[in-house]
Image 1 (cartoon, rainbow, N blue to C red):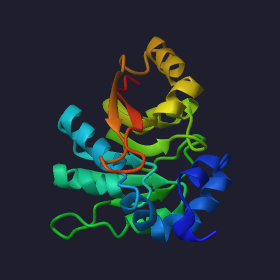
Image 2 (image 1 turned 30 degrees about the horizontal axis):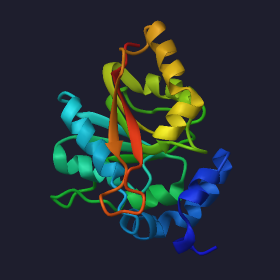
Image 3 (image 1 turned 60 degrees about the vertical axis):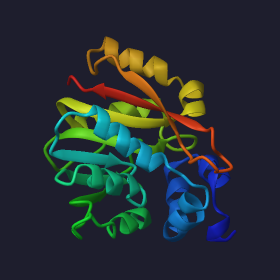
Image 4 (image 1 turned 30 degrees about the vertical axis):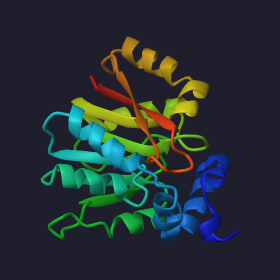
Length: 218
């Protein structure tokens, strides 16, 4: 199968971290042209906008499931002074993210880390003030149980702004996991927003994601 033929079916069919590595190694160089542009995919931009609207002033943020760096790029335009690091399982996708530039020509990302987010996540930096994610909590990628792997990455009262595929949210029990984390005193009661994943005119327009908006109390 050619890179141009890759798309949602292939992305949703992965089941293991190694499946993800293989898919995105093949897809990284054409992901934006063959999928983001061709399908009018606005998810990264939408998450950046939600983050900018809800999160208070922060200096250091972490992009979970960085991909090619589109969410960080959009956020850097909305908040030009924010420091952004990124984590992703795919070194090939991270290589694309490393090419992203801010409006002033500087790199969008201060640092990029290859990490498997399905297990305990090693963080060599001080806890972040905020964490955001688009497109990573979806079929075949990260499930609700992975939220617990992210909480230690955040400082007390740190913002968590995480997009979740709508069907994935319903099918895999994100509401149950969030209730559990609230009961444990790990997070504040979250707000759940909804966003369009594709632009009007896209063949997929109408597909939505839910956005978990909360603060960590660890």
